[in-house]
Amino acid sequence: MRPLTLAAATLAFATPMMAQEVNVYSARHYDSDDALYAKFTEQTGIKVNRIEAKADELIARLEAEGKNSPADVFIAVDVGRMARAEEAGLLQPFNSDTIEARIPDHLQHPENLWFGLSQRARIIFYNKATVETPPQTYEELADPAWKGKVCIRSSSNIYNQSLLASLIEVHGEEAAKDWASGVVDNMARAPQGGDTDQLRGIVSGECDVAVANHYYFLRGFDKEVDGLTESIDTIGWVWPNQEDRGAHINLATASMTAASPNPEQAAALLEFLAGDFAQAQFASQNNEYAAVVDGPDDDSTDRLGDFKADTSTNTAAFSRNAAAAQAIFNQVGWD
Image (cartoon, rainbow, N blue to C red):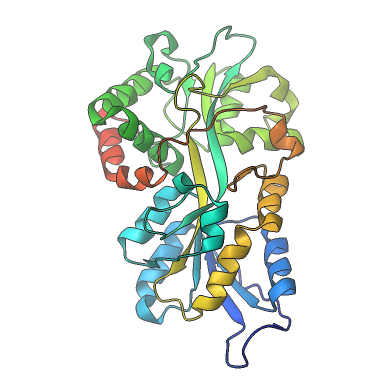
């Protein structure tokens, strides 16, 4: 676990009695986020105390601390784990005109328990040398034509859980179960590794088609990624479901904790994270898509071209259908 990161300055507009700090539990592990908190402190004078760990570890910590928790803000890198915090009663509603104006409704919790910081698209990749007509939809991944050709992560991966939860929302549980069973039948190998490993599977010839979040692919261009960068030009991509609902989008999310001892400072930070500087940082430094309407462009993400995102399926459905998704994974033997 990373030690607390501190930054300090003077808050010009604050009342003398206001505590000038905010405590953040974050599952984001990006050095570029340091610049976000430094800029926030520069603008407000509020000191940021940050603990980084995996989301499940932070949730367990919040539960153990209970009402005595020092945490003000909890940040997760997916809706599924934010849902776990919600179910545990660890969050409180946060009402903000700023966030309501900047963040689209489908990227917010309906009761204002969390909102999206940045967007992560889950898309289809393929071997350009062996695949002439790749799958155009998530549904096509279950077509028997792709038997023995698909690489995808395990069912324990939250990105896949959210994808299946979205399919439950769109098609219902029975159809989603048929889809999951079809994908299992089409797997080139037992699920293993992370998203980068699925892309490496294309390079090695182990699979013809893979599913991964968009930024894992972009990192292969921006930095040297072993087993990927040297052959990245052999990989093509498909933005799925462009003729109907659009590509599945997961979110990095932020919330105010139920026990927040510094709610005013927490509110200031949350609104800052929805602001222009932070949204540009998410896009330019981490290859993510901004959550705000008409968010900033980035050369790396521009490489993937324009696409239609699924805005009709509220991301809150990912948490609502999480238990059903896991049950389906178990039933069809998706390891």
